[in-house]
Length: 494
Image 1: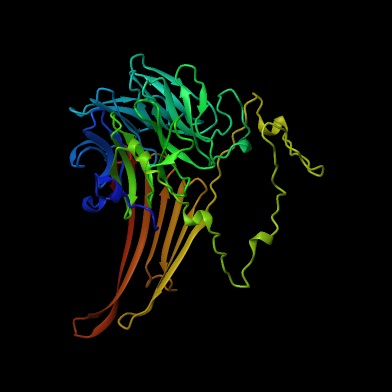
Image 2: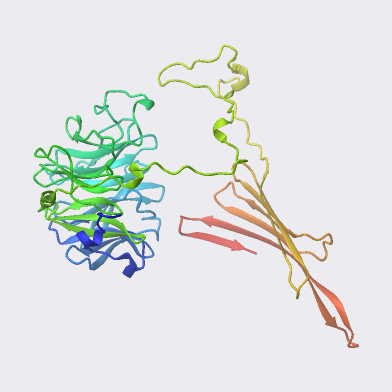
């Protein structure tokens, strides 16, 4: 910890999660004129998009309220992205909206939104081209995640990468002709080159640049560390990014005058999500301090090269971790024999090598197809399994000992659930028990309930004599729930 800075000591704190009584203030995007910052915050409980002042962090207004309706069901806080139009009048972001993700453009002044469904399961990290009326984003079509370009004027969508690699955290070059991104593609920068799965490390991210016209890809970093959130200075000469070279995420700069990337921060708790003002004077970042995320503004980031910071590796990177101690009777799983009899191993693009003693299972056409050549559909057979057994016992001097047991059964698909709760007494007349069955395979859920309660008490008859009496209650119930969205449903019960 010695020698490292706390974020508030080197940057201006624009939000304070302790004062706001929240935990997330993230995804900063500074406006083209440098006066405002768009962020995602849960200051009101659920996540929304807000505008704050770039000077003092004052909350100016809420642009979008998320998580309250199906229209903005989820704002993707794990892969957030907000971007300004070049004229500073609109914002673009991606959100889960009903059946799939959508790209939203909101007018900053009026709050009016336009929604674009682009046939994507996921839309993340949108970035507005600073020159053209087009938006780049990371899209997931259900099979692969790639970088896409959406042209707002022609309403056309283009897949720039179309490969099996991961691409993330995109940003435009100042001239709008190329995009920066991080990827696990390793030594395979060009799209046509195939790569077997074991030839790249999915845990290693480097920075790449792709030309929007030729789609050629250039590798910009080749290190043993993870780089993230790359952006250009507005003259296009300096690359600003985050690296975990020291074991802690810090901001680094790289240009032609430097022999190697140079750190300009040495913080204790890490930095993420960079946004640079148009005059390169203010670098807005997300930082973690005191169990919460906040927005910070770092002044004159390019001038910080003159400090010649030297960031020492974190201790966890240089020290050998202590050996775990265990009892002598502890079973060492490293010596346990593992059977691979039911596994078939294969190399990518090559046929599997089967042991000579193995005989591949074969199915005849008659066993799997009918007379028309169609595959035979076998109906699903409901089979219940016991998922939960739970019990408790209590004793007090005022009441007699009590004990309850609970049982829960369900089938493999979760279409049927049975719940039973009962007192652990032999006499059914004197015990409480509860039975319910839930029918769940359709859109409308149905629940059926039967219960019995028995309460014993001392009563006085007409002659003034006390007797132990019993009050029994039997009940039946049925209820139904019909959802319209994640936030609205109709319920009925008797």
